[in-house]
Image (cartoon, rainbow, N blue to C red; front, top):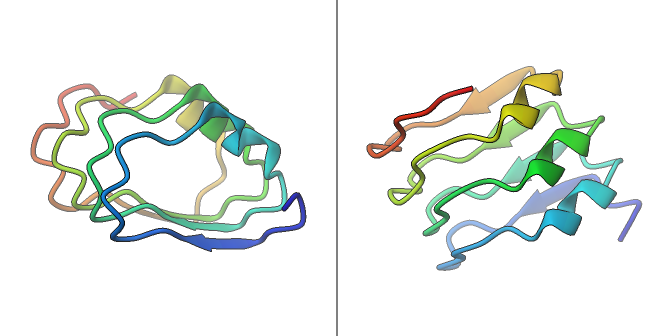
Length: 88
């Protein structure tokens, strides 16, 4: 899985993203939209190749990890994250 470049797990009723996601360093596209994720793990910041991130429609999501600021994203979607109160 370390060579994985595209991961789309929307919508799957996922409540948590494991911190080991940070080991997927070749991942360039991650769509975790339309799930039930409450927070993003710090491991997200280790996705050095990530250029597209979609976290939209994760209603329980209240905060983004500060490690997200280290990403070089070309596209970041965060629509309908109504409970998001702490952007980095």
